[in-house]
Amino acid sequence: MDSARKGFAIVCDSACDLPLSNLERAGVALVPLVVRVAGHSYRDCIDLNPVDFFVELSSTKGQVTTFTPAVEEFERVYRSLVNRGYTDIVSLHVSSRIRDAYDLAVKAAHRVREANVHVVDTKCVSGQMALVLARLVLDRDAGMSTEAAVEGAVKVAESARALIIPAPDASPTLVGSRVHHGLLGRADSLRVRALGVRRCFSIGDDGVAVEQFRSTDIRLLAGNMARSMSSYSQVVGPLTYVEINAGVPRLLSTIEKPLDTNEFEAKRAAILNTNPTTTALLGVGAVGLAYVPQSLLPAEEAAGILRYIP
Image (cartoon, helix red, strand yellow):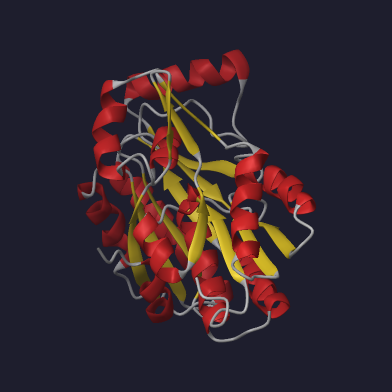
């Protein structure tokens, strides 16, 4: 990143589900989340190839965990940007209801007194967070002030929505989700798996995952997802959306089909393959949609940041 060209630096964690090449091209510094596989720790996006990880996760059941790096890693990234001449840093992070990256980033920001570090809890996950990041990058590159750009990113974060269908064998609950916990939650999860039921969770402006629908037919879930988007579009107007895929791209066609409708207008900006930490949480075979009003982020502009360019 060139401090003479960029007014402020941008940092995000790897829960945004963008590959490292996209982040580097956009001038975004990464704090990678960490994946532990059979006792060995790997940095998300750096030490693990997302496509290879789809296969590895399938063969290492029960041996994969994910966590946020220590506060020192956030501090290291901030100080490296200070050393490049930045005095303003905007740090975007996955929903604090899902992971503790935001809390650790705040602690690190307090240690770095040489710059103003604006830490943002996006209350978003995956493609939602990617849409927020795209808005911030576009505004920075347009020469917008730090304060105005943060305000714009927060507006997108508050308006972004996600609908996610985890894999059948995913963890019984999403962290922070409003579903049953404890014995009742485990019993429900076992019943769901035995019957081949898929569940769809929504994530709104509070960053909490709420189960919305369940069915043994993913086509019915896809129809319900389209109706949810249609209802939101009636309030906010046309939508920009991204598709989220964890290793089974053929399922995306099932999700896409109901979106080809005259009931509402929506334009796809990108297809995102989940990074390893998201894949570990949602399971191989998870699919989803994240969307935001086009008035806040046109699809054509978002695509320049989000689409994969090798």
